[in-house]
Length: 381
Ligand SMILES: Cc1cc2nc3c(=O)[nH]c(=O)nc-3n(C[C@H](O)[C@H](O)[C@H](O)COP(=O)(O)OP(=O)(O)OC[C@H]3O[C@@H](n4cnc5c(N)ncnc54)[C@H](O)[C@@H]3O)c2cc1C
Image (cartoon, rainbow, N blue to C red; front, side, top):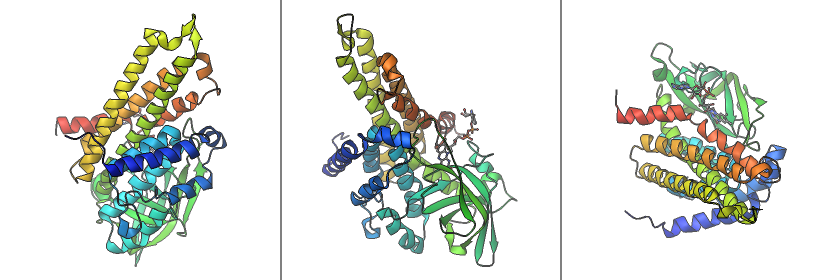
């Protein structure tokens, strides 16, 4: 076993850290208040190759693995969780399934534009009546001649406002049990009949985009099918294994930011004639935070390593997400407490960390769904 990061991993971590500290940290609170990410940030991410981090070099990407992506996402989310989720969804929920299930023509058509950031990716699974029970989706796809015709409404779509390519999950067979009649489709934004609906106002990650995506007789060519017909639920679940490693990395980054802010404040703030960091009660909080974060990092890196080896990482990814998202919320909560009254105000960025951490226990599978996945591995049906 080797815990030493490779030379490439150190380089990409340092590159992401420099970018995050120079471009995101000073602006994250402003982005949160304005509710969107400035376009120049996306451009700089393109220049650094972040949009194509895991896309192969022959399709214009950097050809790195899930472990490098996890390392980068920790750094980006340490500075700005809104930018972090935007990047995570693009890489792990769109690039990844195209690389795994796409035809050569689909890879040639879409991967270069995803790698450069010309098109940002979005993942459309959730519907008003299908959240944790994702197999209950009602959006339909019917073949008419050489075209698929899609109808339905997707909700809570990250990157919806500016995405150029959507992977849409729709029902293609109603005669079989619900998970077996779903297919995945690649739908570009210029598709007639596709429109962007309501944008959500959120508790946290406010600068990220979360919208409805409406499909009204949206026509796409027959070859827009991603993966085999009626195997879309498998595509969705394979994709989410990677996505969960991304969200666990997001949670880790938020948690690290909370620990760093806590250490800084506990040295500066004095009560009863000494820095509050001299009180053992504060030191124990810091110790517990560091343990939870280090354990999360180990689980994340193990899950990413398994995925890079093309081994099953379903259980490991769920363990990483469950643990890291709880750690992020624990750390953000204790961080706010360590900051006392000031932590509850906008004098510090810790109230943003507290709000941003919350979503990591909800999206890409709530914590209860992660427990179901983990338990299924322990006690197979
Ligand atoms: C900001 C944001 C961004 C998102 N981005 C995307 C995206 O890009 N693409 C996409 O497709 N979706 C996205 N989602 C949707 C997200 O994945 C779902 O919200 C999530 O899976 C939970 O579904 P739900 O909201 O319908 O909650 P529900 O499934 O209705 O859950 C409600 C409660 O019931 C509990 N519960 C449900 N089932 C069980 C069970 N079997 N056992 C025990 N408890 C259970 C849950 O734990 C939860 O506490 C996003 C959501 C948000 C808020």
